[in-house]
Image (tube, rainbow, N blue to C red; front, side):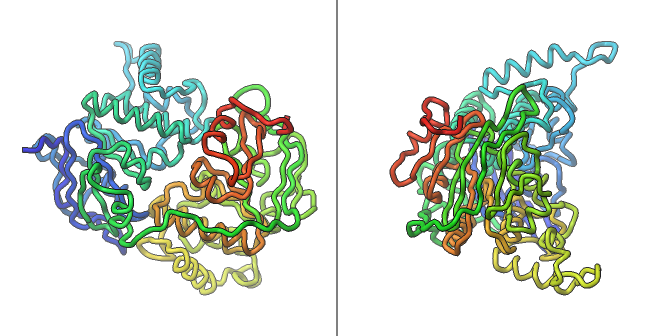
Length: 512
């Protein structure tokens, strides 16, 4: 008999307008890494949220070690040794890293005072053991998304959980960090922990999982032994059709300059000195320029400076020859900028608004959508319905869906639809395919190339080296806030880029 630690049997979960999980059965063996694969909105995160006690299912039972268990809330799950790293992190931004890790699992002395020294020692030991270095005294609001991911993993390890749920854990990590995390997961499994691993990345499933269960549109498709199946077979199970992994594009024909960045610097919030240091480059019509680098080397801050989310301390920014260094975010957004932000919740969406209101966030003042200060609801609805159809944004109730209830991948598709559809000369796309399934990635890649071919200038920030190599016409590598090299993807290799990204090499003439 198979030794199952967790069994989710015939689980059904319904939300308004959608059956998120339709009679799904998943069984996790002790000590295995079990991948859960499916398109955006297939029901993976919902199923795991049922296991973690965040949702109550309409039907079905959960067993642990063969015994039926009641999981009414996350405290029940924690008591059963089940931990979860969520796709959208559950951290208190104004607290320090250490306080976030121990929050809810504090140890105190007889007088009720926190034993913080002991907690710090335990966290330091775990971060060393699993190679998850973080600054324990930094505030969460000041650290990168990749670092926040590590905090979430340390939270789970600190609680000594034996069943670990990873919801899209690699979506925010660099290639090197992903390798480390997959190794960590293997070591966890070897030490007896059982892992449920939600991902869209087929090569990761092949690299790390023992078995893989596939969901499609809320239904269970099947479970396979990973070693007995191919990436192509998995992708077909997931999307129901064959997927083309290659990006086809003709050579670029750059025209006039659209964006010019001259010697810009931004001060670091965390440490002394600049997080972006004297950076200069340009992007022309009809080309895709990609800024590559390991997370935390200033790419995020560079985009904040260009888009106006942060004030630059020196230098100038020009859009179509006009100096926009001191322009407001709104001026930039309505004069040729489109921006797919890195943090979709903080800068991309208003989560408690409907999908249709999010679709017109920057455009509600246009005559098309308002008349003498009054919104035209019919025009907004029609526009939103058109984008939902065109970009395959899946949600329970279409345009009136509250965005918070949508899957992360479909939230991302909504932002991409809005930004690509509005009038713009420059598209700044930061991790545009983060959290998307292979079918959606294929579509978005085609759309980015189409943007270029239609004469738009595209500035792409990506941590996915495959994406960098296949999409870009020019590659700039950023290391410690400076551009250390410029490359042609046709004549460089992933290995060479890696050396520059790690700071082992730099070109003369990179921004000093």
